[in-house]
Length: 229
Ligand SMILES: [Zn+2]
Image (cartoon, rainbow, N blue to C red; front, side, top):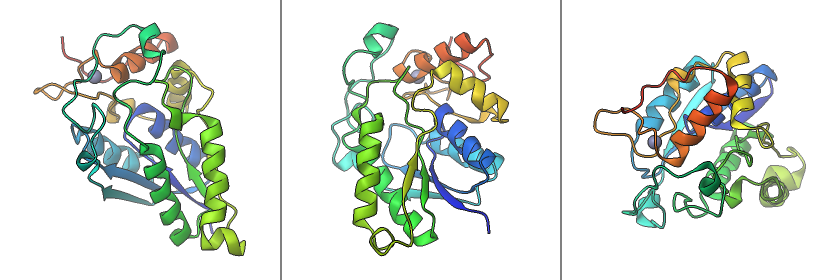
């Protein structure tokens, strides 16, 4: 039987590349996405297409209303920053940080992994060319991994030794784009924009769009997504 892995899949460049890496490493992938009250559900459509294109065995979309908690530009009526420089993006924790989001997501991934008998969780966290989110750092992931082995029946009884894989954590966006391309990711299926326009095209100016565009430019590749203007 193939080894199973749960892969967090937002539908963006990083999670799509992470899913492709899990596949290349021979895992049977169970993709997990969240309809958490984000500003738009366009990324979930991308997650569905990416999961299908990269051969996920199952794709589960869980509904969690993080909008009831709010506290982020993605889940409350707080403006999404636009047109920031790379230096500004790299400084501090922006308002697009969603309180404890990756802990919430990884906890659900862990629960599903325990049920599936999967010991591996893949998570496309990245600290370089990223937005300075505290729950994307490896020390955070290491702490979650320790917690996972203390928190579960499978961990305590020793039937699973949980491991959180973060294959992109030290890669630049350009390196991620190149790796994904080499593994056959169709980036035309992915989505990154925090706040698309009414015409459903990416805004091109939010931090996520800017990091994506910078990554493709530095990789010398063309981004297949249409942008406004
Ligand atoms: Zn955008």
